[in-house]
Length: 125
Image (tube, rainbow, N blue to C red; front, top):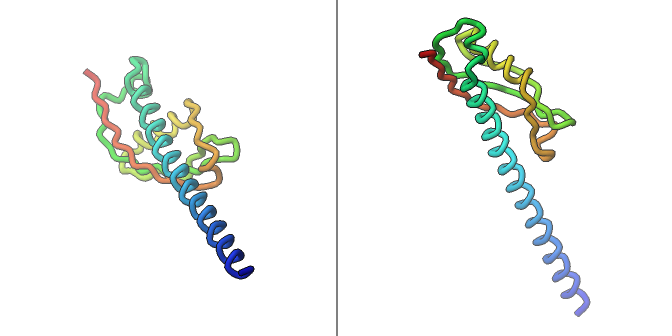
């Protein structure tokens, strides 16, 4: 009878640990989605400002896809690692946004690198 109780306790402990693992994965994936949404909103707001980077640098049109690779620092801030695109002005703009806007990630993302693909579309009218 003693062996049966031990086995039951081990199964319950395993199920509890599995549930915690799935919860952590869900938290991390939700944190990633929220971070991508926040980054997207920062870029949208920045582009909509009348005295924005494009206006100041006399850029009247941009239609570029940029791949942004960044790491989440211990203080939850983001640091750029690599930018990939064909247009140098687009790279400069992304660097400008990451320098001038405070974007914070969730604690569960700290220490990891992530890649976000952005479509930058701007046209002055």
